[in-house]
Length: 279
Image 1: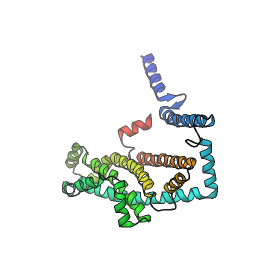
Image 2: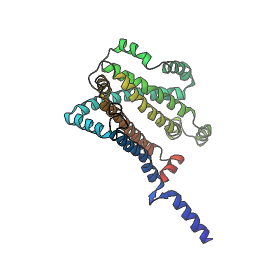
Image 3: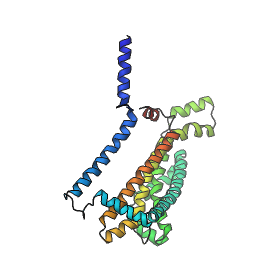
C-alpha cells in the first residue's frame, strides 16, 4: 500500500514539475521559445541573403533603428502620444460600455430599448465611419480619441451584459433563501460571477483600441506610432515599419499581462483559475 501511495505521489510530482521547475513556470518559458526561434531564423535568413533587406530587414537592423530613434527622443515622443490617446479612449469607451452593459444586463426593458441599436452600430465597418467622424470632429485629437473609445465600447458592453445574464439562477435562488438584500446579491454573486466575462471583454477591448488607434493616426497628424509607420511607408523605410509593428506587439503583451494581474486579484476565488495557478 505504501508503495502504491509513493508511486502515485511520484507520478503527481512528475506531472507538476519539469526540469526542476513547476509546470506553470515551464509552460511560461516554453511560450517564449517559439518567438525566440522565429527571431533567430529571421536573423539568419536576412544575414545569409535569403531575404532581401528591402523586404524584411534583419532584427539587428531594426534594433539599431530603434536605438537611433530612442537617442534622438523621437521614439518616446511618438510612443507617449499614442499611449495617451489609447488610454483616454479606453477609459472613456470602457466606462460607457461597462455602464451600459450593467444596465442592459440587469434590465430586460433596457435591453429592448438599447441593445438592437448598439448591435446595429457595431455592425458598421470601422473604416466606413471615418468620413462621418471627420465631419463631426475634424481631424484633431477628439476624433482620434472618439474612434478608440468607440472600438473599446462594444466588446466591454457585450461581455459585461452576457456575464450578468449568465449568472447561475440557482445562486439567485440561494440568495433569496438566505435573505440577502439586493446590494449584497450584486456585490457577492452577480459582479463576481460576471467578472471572468468582463475581463475577457477588457482583453478584446485592448486589442481593438490599438487597431482603432492605427486607423485614427492615419488622419492628419504629425505624432504617434501610426504616423511613424505611415511616414516610413512614404520613404520605403521597412525597418521603421517593422519597428512600429514590434512596438504594437510588445504593448499587446504588456497589456495582456496587466489583465492577468487583474485576474489574479479578482478571480483568485474561481476554481478553474485557482487550478491554473497551482499547475
